[in-house]
Length: 258
Image 1 (cartoon, rainbow, N blue to C red):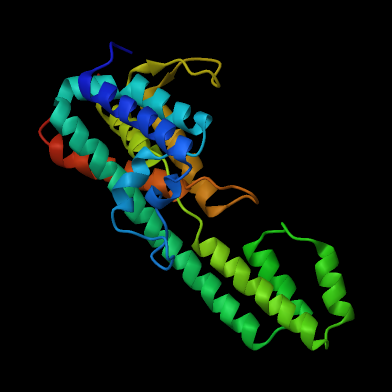
Image 2 (image 1 turned 30 degrees about the horizontal axis):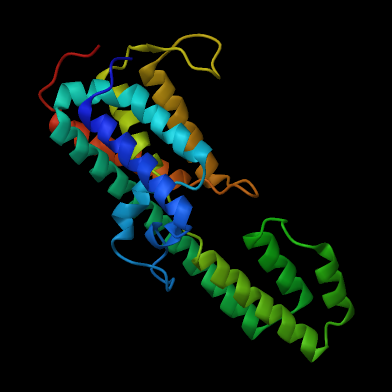
């Protein structure tokens, strides 16, 4: 869109350096965002997770979007306001994600306790279907049905359910996606009629329609979670929501759109 601006450049450098450093020492997990139930949770993770990425592709996709859409926003606001926007939308994304995650893990905990109190083959299937979404071995259920009254088998399934709960509590979130989706929302609001040519779209699309379509997809993907989907869709939506709120406050007297 335009030449890279100072704060966008600084954020890019920090993210790349952080990825290389923590990948080298293999200790990025302590800076990713964990649920508060996890022994790995620290309050500073609400900020640090924004500069952690799980792979080169994850890093590239976020930084490429920052590089494309960030400079026009920084040119309008200035570097300090752009950094404020980036951090607030990233933090807001993590707060919304943490809230949704808390609700999901509360449900998981209730189902785990219910199973521990009344284990059975039918209850185990319901638990696995609900929380593993088909990602389990049918032979385990078949063996349990065959030995439904075996105390050792029952205890083994109880232990497995506890391990599932503990593993899900300790799944971290990391990445700059919340802040990047905030940038996308801001770009679509401030420059709604700017036409974008995207690799996966065969024709130009105005920024406002691109943002609306992307937002609608994130809502759908968050509600209809597909098996194996490990994308934090509600963090993306959180970034967009907080961006919308900030823009309404910052740009309330603005009448011109591009």
